[in-house]
Length: 70
Image (cartoon, rainbow, N blue to C red; front, side):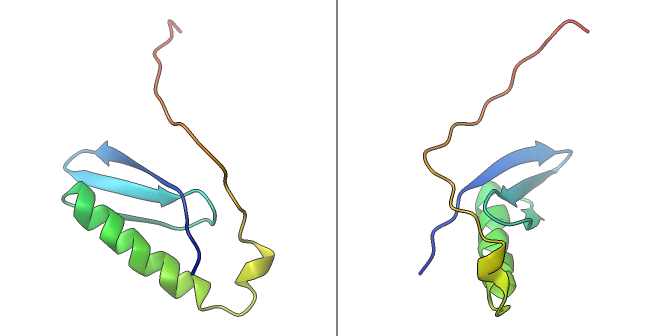
């Protein structure tokens, strides 16, 4: 079993979830649906026999957002 890190953000009426270990993303109408869809997408992605070559371990992580005057 592998664990993975992800971020979730809202775009219009959908929540987008993006895996930080591999280049996989998904979306849903709720945060839970978005994460559930991401889990399924990552599982399908990891079925590929060569995926260990591109899977990256991501340690403790924090996400945030800031505004700048630009």
